[in-house]
Length: 267
Image (cartoon, rainbow, N blue to C red):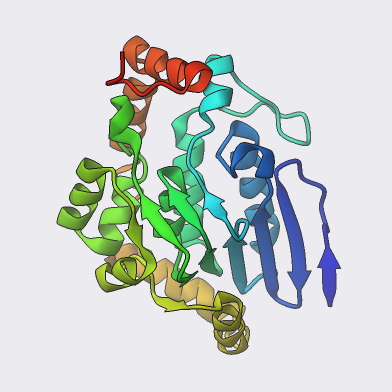
């Protein structure tokens, strides 16, 4: 069974193939950045995967996996405004939605695969770190650029530290510089790299699609209990994120960059 766009979403493309769900971030006009609707769309897509999917594959474009928060959208509106989902229900629009989405990827009853090509920055690294398996081609680059704008990756760090340890996450945060796919694999952020990552993905799916839904569900539940306490860290991460993105100086720095292309240290 191969169903394309089984459900209509604004920011993602969905394809179902047997027990595998392919989710593609589809905001090319915005460099595949994260806006409020993307969080809602991905959360709803994962809800639909709860009962039937054994594997969920998240990808972007060949050039950009995900470039983090949509600064243009942030500069246009108050980040605390609420939005409504596809069913008209009001969403509690806080960083908690983003954290909950990554938590579902990390602990949900399916194997989550991040298929990374091109750039993964800031919140894009959050998607990577929250995934069970990360596959990349040699073009992939990973960076945390938040500190350039007086921010820090509050919601990303619990997931990233779980993957690579504190010091490497600390270094990525402070340096703000990208690392390549091979270095990311040495650090444990990426599990496998090949020049043609589509071949790598197909090879993994051949084995993963044989796993039972009940087996995956039980294992992921067990793994979440013996690994880093992601649920317990949510309140601290969300509070940190809110403090940063409601700070007027940080907001001004973001708006200045969006409108004039000027970094905070430039006159």
